[in-house]
Length: 160
Ligand SMILES: Cc1cc2nc3c(=O)[nH]c(=O)nc-3n(C[C@H](O)[C@H](O)[C@H](O)COP(=O)(O)OP(=O)(O)OC[C@H]3O[C@@H](n4cnc5c(N)ncnc54)[C@H](O)[C@@H]3O)c2cc1C
Image (cartoon, protein in one colour):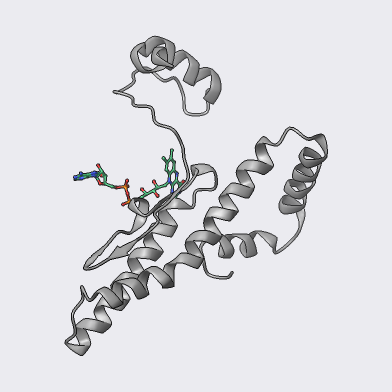
């Protein structure tokens, strides 16, 4: 692993081989870091007058491109709750409000975590029956009319 971080030529050659020529030839690389892709859901997202949102509250496997969307929904809901407080002349750091925010967000966060986990397991499972089911599902996804907007809406949190 250290070789990928320290040796630019080795990193570029490996990247090129894995990525192919779709983006042309990779000629230079910046400083790299490595960290494990672990799933995290904070035990507590609101405490007293503090609240954590976005990746500070949850990190997902990046397999399904859902992390940023989820963070935006956290920010949107918190902003809506805080604006309502401002309109009422109430405290935006009220611990009860922040707890209410946490409660309001948990089900979406858990739903997306489950979805990403299912995708990771579906794509890494060694069982041939699971692989076959996954391939059939991918072909169906590609061929069936109207399924893509449904999945896209689900992924964007527009329908659950
Ligand atoms: C490889 C990869 C691919 C991804 N692909 C997608 C994708 O295709 N679609 C998608 O929706 N999401 C994707 N994500 C997830 C997405 O990038 C994150 O969910 C999103 O960036 C989180 O936003 P955030 O603002 O909560 O946190 P971050 O983007 O992590 O921002 C936190 C910021 O705080 C700074 N910071 C940290 N500690 C301190 C400190 N002590 N003091 C001051 N500043 C600090 C950091 O430097 C950083 O700039 C991907 C993630 C990874 C790792």
